[in-house]
Amino acid sequence: MKEVYGEQCLARCTIFRWCQRYEAGRVNIKDLPCPGQAHVVTNSAMISAVDELIRQNCRITTSEIAVELSISKGAVNLIIHKKLGNGKGCAQWVPKHLQRIRRRREWVFA
Image (cartoon, rainbow, N blue to C red; front, top):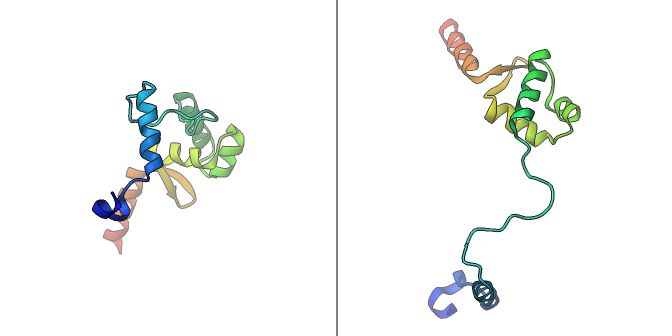
């Protein structure tokens, strides 16, 4: 098979493993969920808790939020930037659409 497909050819053991799984009854090609800690903790309660902390103190850092809520800094960043649509502007958390308006004003006055 390597003569035909070259280096992109699958290993023989991988094909055998797939055949064993198919014969055992697995027909879904998607990965099975792995046991352990959940990768993302972005439920609505956590999103509202982060939003409330930012509203109380707009100069709070992601590290402080992560310690306060006992979640990772990556999860805090995901919630702030993707779910809430905020970003840092002048050391304060501000909605991104306000940052764009502020930049336009600076261009006009510059």
